[in-house]
Image (cartoon, rainbow, N blue to C red; front, side):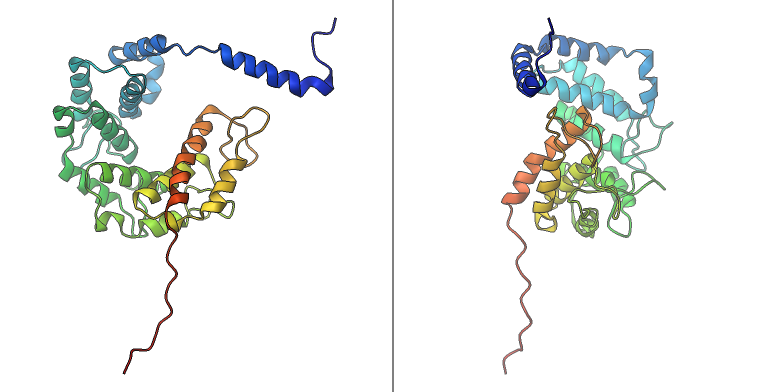
Amino acid sequence: MNPFPPRCHAARWLRRTVEVCARRIAFLRDEHVGYILSGISHLSPGFVALDASRPWLCYWMVHALDLLGHPLSAAQGDAFVDFLSRCQDCEGGGFAGGPVPGQAAHLAPTYAAVLALLSIGTKRAYAAIDRPALRRFIVRMKSPGGGFCMHDDGECDVRGAYCALTVASLCDLLDDEISAGASAWISRCQTYEGGFGATPGEEAHGGYTFCGLAALLILDEASAIDRHALAYWLSQRQQPHNGGFEGRTNKLVDACYSFWQGASFPLLDAALAAPTAAPTAAPTASPG
């Protein structure tokens, strides 16, 4: 007997099978918590490839435990604070991917370290952030065109703008000097498709779209976005046969891009609710 349904019923059979499987999926919360906690004290040798991303490992652990509703103990929180403090460049500002000296400050691990410390949320964690040095670092990363370099002599793309503006906003450092020109530069990264590329003129991409959209909302510049073009591009990235999202046009779906594209929809909702830019009034002759 043929175990497979006739072709004309295949779509209906697949849909019903997926629905049944979805109802049977159990989220193994305790197992996830256990896995994360095991990484606090020890990581397998394979993680050596992430030696320059160690604040990211801290952030992923801290944030995941927070999402899972499992609070850190005081000792665990202090251990994270101690390690992240060693990654901070107190002279040049910012955080490196590992202990300083040895690695250079970079906006990506700076973002991860600051978010991890704020998620820990203790006075000691807050005090670990050298805000004056952090501001010096962000200002130094600012490019003349309004974007931000990821590190000294590094690439300038919309990731840098998002990381810099997020950290500046969270640490109450965002001012006219840091934000000058940023909105105009980021808005130029939106492509004819509707999504955002890494830099002006590059292909629309899910990760960069999240960064550009979030950065403009931090700046309260939703009116700088072609919101309807963005809504169309985002909705077209979800593929009907499996429900996942692709990161770029005509690419395969994956979980990473499903996160970036999916996370953009709440931001897009906020952008659509924001007022549009007021039309520029025509000049009028002064009376008299």
